[in-house]
Image (cartoon, rainbow, N blue to C red):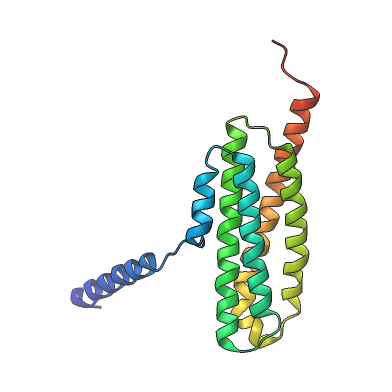
Length: 172
């Protein structure tokens, strides 16, 4: 391969990376982002909001993907599932940050764990899709399921630690 072809290939790759990075979008609506900002000093409220936003995205994915074989609907469902996954990751980051700051989130953690159990059951419904639907939704569903499972494990660990901390308060 000539040096010219190598340089052209590298430049095309760099250009495509720029296009991909430019396509990153925030899954939150303007209203949702404002609600999160308004709750900036209330970690438990932020957790509940993120859980609610994730539930909304999963509901949209179900509406668009479970009962349709139209490619446009399936693409929309795939985007909804990707947004759901990003929101689950944000939820985990919020929980980890609050936990690291020593915030008490036991009731929120229990709510999150219940919500995630429901998410897992609902995502299982996507496993029954036909081949055409699986072609478009298979990877986003797998990523969403992995995000839920990872989050459930992290929340269980945080909840266990918080329960231990409450059972054995530090002596001053």
